[in-house]
Length: 233
Length: 85
Length: 118
View 1: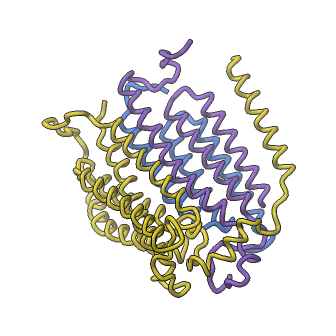
View 2: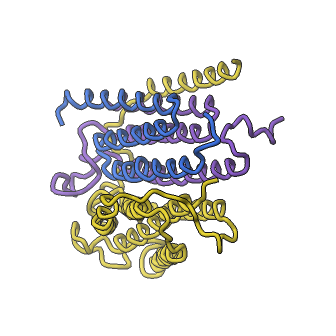
View 3: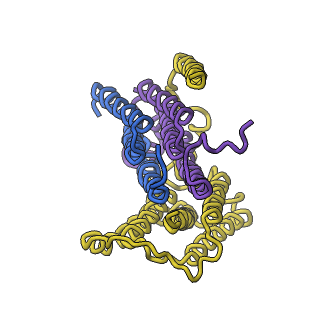
């Protein structure tokens, strides 16, 4: 098999590059300039205790807008690829086994708790590990549990789209407000930074991260619902 | 954690991850390969916790090992039948 | 410890690429790509780690004044967080295309898709 030999040669070359990289690598013992700046200035400037959150939401907030835009595009393309044109009239007619009593009852108990955990994770993103992306994924997993309990349940695509677009719009509006009332686009100091470590601190970061959480949760949910509503072919 | 223990535990996780990755790319049944890929992600998220990255660990556990595996299975459920490996 | 994790990441990348290049089933190719993706994330986190330091979260253990001497580099972590989220987006997109191809042809064998082959 000539093809396999070529693949192995390619991987061998790549492996040699990796080995060369590892031999030349010495771990830093001091923070580099960027890391040092973030470590020293986050507490005074941003007021967030979680420095990763401060980087994602404020210092590199523009990249995060790009990231949620990429996610939105992904959800839109998945919806476009998997849409069935006029599906009206012939609804899904799959014969499915009844989901068990345990799963149904358990999901009634667990779904509100999972949603609550998701909201907690993205509201406390500036204090503890976590934030909008993790919280959004947790919210989407609550939707996933509902899908597993009743695969034929109809989720309102319109509601998902409305939540997603409103939170995206508010995210950008808050960013523009920063342009007028604070230092620049997505500056979090349009609200007072407050006391370090309390829930209502770090300016607009909890608001922005909650909006990101809702948006990401809606996007993941729409991907899951779209993929789950495809029919057997 | 203990100074001696950390490299040993890291090595253990590394071996487990490489084994799971081997299963993921070599095993015959696709469903087992998908579960093994999810296992690689899950072990990676514990490794991230050792490397003092709790944010990344949470993201990897929720997204990389949770949602991704379920997306794989949704698609696998649709294409099963009429399909030989 | 950093070296172990980096070696693991590199091995995972190589294994994932090998699986993606040699398997014939599109779903298995996507699974292999997700393994390689995990390997890249492990390497990036390992590069940011510094021995004897703690997570970049300010609390009682890490007072603000000593933060620069006590925490590890937060920038790679922010990068990896983005990479994981986008990785799910890419995987979903690949899966949607795989489903579409299956619908069109009734097979997922990559060697049967030869329209653009020359």
